[in-house]
Length: 239
Image (tube, rainbow, N blue to C red; front, side, top):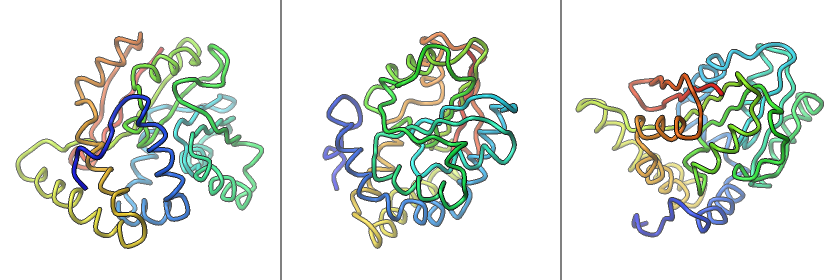
């Protein structure tokens, strides 16, 4: 599919992305872990480690999907978790996972919009979002909402795919991301859904630009940490 078939920002993007994730929800976990060779679990754990969650805290996991981040977060701390996603199909499969693990009392799944969080001001201690930031229509609006609901001193960790620097690994990654991943994803789902992924990564702000967006919304101590040759990046900040 040609690049200009995709919408990468604005209000028109949301319903298309929502429909896409509802479409792939049934196979999302299998494809996500298979196509990343299982490394995505390690990346998620690294992001949660940076948050430094403590017993009794409240975590908001935005773009929670099938609740992977929330489930992993409970491995290290006894916390209360809200998992928010705008794709009902993803939440349906997430709820099944929580019931199977008897975690429905610790993790509450909510259908909602990151640009209009259904939470009170200063009501959470930490926010995580894994591979969901580039799917939002208005990044700045969502960051402002993150800032609003965080308590003073609260932390946010954004885990996102990124373009790896360097002339050696970069071309290898681009070939896998643009050719191999859409091909194998297309065997189990709509090929265009997995063509969207590399396109959305290319349209996401650079590391420096995204950190500037966080600073502009009032966050402090903004840093980034590259993972696996820069394939993924964690952006961390405090309120």
